[in-house]
Image (cartoon, rainbow, N blue to C red; front, side, top):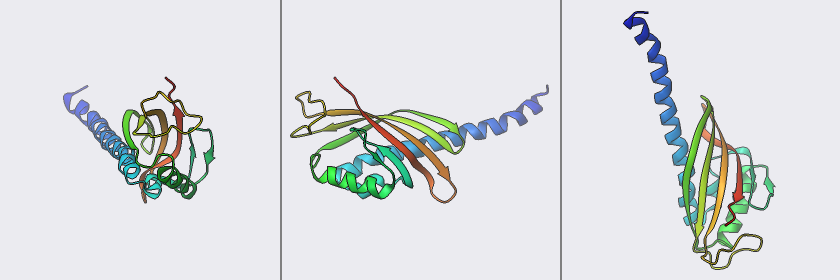
Length: 156
């Protein structure tokens, strides 16, 4: 095969790799934006990047079936037992499943917890670790949004 033919074949692959990198950057930004929403105690901002009918399973196994319920519950949590806490999001992996679907996994660290809520592991240091998985979809109207999230406690 000629060098020119190889170059022509490589162009679409290079464009695909470049697009995937930009997509991963956007997904990373969406997940890391959860930190500012948490700090502000803003459940609406927390849920902003979820699709309208997105599902979420929380630490206790409760399923929420839409963005509005997700936002309401996070407002309650952020203004209740987790008021005044800090969140850090460490994105561990982003896998592009297709050009419009991705799976991401992050470790969340909630610190400055004054009193650990019942049912959560208390290490005695006011810190809670969770592992959160996200299924994301992209469309032409909204860009990347979370389709489903699942949060799991990391036990010591």
